[in-house]
Amino acid sequence: MSTTDARKRRSTKRPRPVRSRRARLILRSLVAVVAVAAVVGVTFLILAIVTDDSVDRPVVTATAGDRTVKVEPFEWCDPQTPTECDPPGETADIPVAKGTPLVIDVPDAIAQAPWSLKRYYVDPGVVDGGVGSLIPEEQIFTPGSTHSITVPPVNPDGNVLAGVEITLPTGIIDQATGDVTYIDHATWSIKTR
Image (cartoon, rainbow, N blue to C red; front, side, top):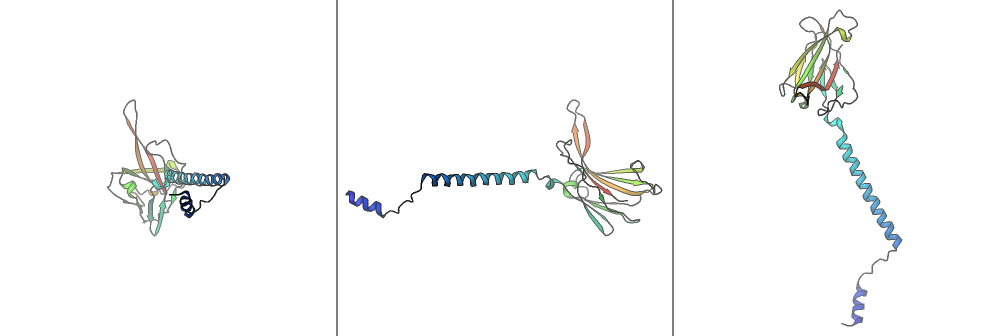
């Protein structure tokens, strides 16, 4: 094959665009910026999903008569480290009329764990109804035993319902003694009076 034939073959190939050194540097820089932006965007998205604790916070439903309220946690602490808690939330308010019971519905996230319902009654003659006048009653539920509970507006002693709390306990083990202490890591608070 002659050198003329080789030249002809080369000339039939598509010519490569000639890029200056500066153009290549700009193109590489642009690709690097886009790659870094993509990594930062994906990292931000992952962190947003991982740190979005609201997904793990069950909502309780309270109904009195024809009024229904969705109740967010009043208190929420990490079950693994129950001393790390969110700032306190709001107490839901759902007035309970005379003769109308309060119906509490809990989601699976609560019902499938041991949980308690704390009812607080007050003597109907008490005007101020401060914390000192509350008469507590507690009922503990085993995992899977119920999703719904009806709370009477008046207890057998004639005291009027002032509010309820739904709580989830967490056990803390004393490493030195092995003793277990139970504290509430989550509380839903409802005022009825």
